[in-house]
Length: 385
Ligand code: GLU
Image (cartoon, rainbow, N blue to C red; front, side, top):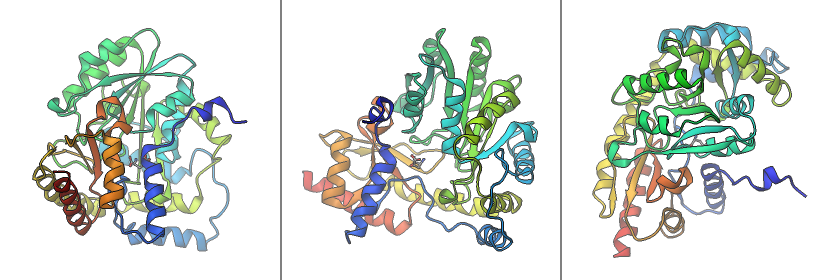
């Protein structure tokens, strides 16, 4: 009855669990959720105001499929100033960052071609490759090595079928931040072997140690880099579904075809809000970053104080990816924590085989939730004996 493509597709480990939490909460169960990477802050008021003004002004119709020109101009200036990416509006399209990643894979991967993914990595890259009938080539990373991707491992994974490498810095789920020399080595490989780099930079504003580098700004990389970013994480705008994709003009015009046959465009009032977010500068972003840093500093010692759990200090994003040696696999632990302690977090195995033995906890949650959640986890672990 259903296509093989869809039957073989697994649900998203993040979204499915967060749906389950919403259902339990609706039933009146007091669950503390550390599932989704979603800031608990309100979207800045000026951004909300811009959307309301646009709605009042009747901005409720179709917009150009590439995105409105004004917003693309803002994005071009923004990525030049912040990331050193020299680009023009024909290199930029406006779409939700997650759809942008899906579209990027659809645009470049043929049946049987390979995409190199770090392991562990975000839950949806693999299924996106699967939907394009490509194959995933995983490059395992190590906790002991701070979850850093090694260029040598990437080199060993490259073969004649390799089409692209996905880089995600700061990384979901590990919070690691790639250094400039690491990115330079990978850029060299991409050029030597003529492959694309898909640079998922949605967490670029959330760095606590180190600096963010955009590989698209490196010598000779603009042509072969597809950069994806957006406002969800930086501006607490997850529900607005606004982000962008940057690439060479031929790539962008191909993605535009996909947009025209699927989403059509993003709502005008949302793009007006996006413009306001970029216009209003980094004040709100910095306020949120500082608060995430405080929460990280509160959370990591709490994790490490519980026997069987251990976590290195993550340098970016808002996830603690901690080791859990409690005599059960991460899926079982996630289920039991939810049922017995009413605490929800994502099992490490959702992020790839190397994630087994770990749990991802989003600390984009209030300090009260972090304190109460950790109290419940401690109680649960103590009861295990
Ligand atoms: N990217 C966020 C996360 O990993 C949101 C959920 C999703 O898109 O997977 O939690």
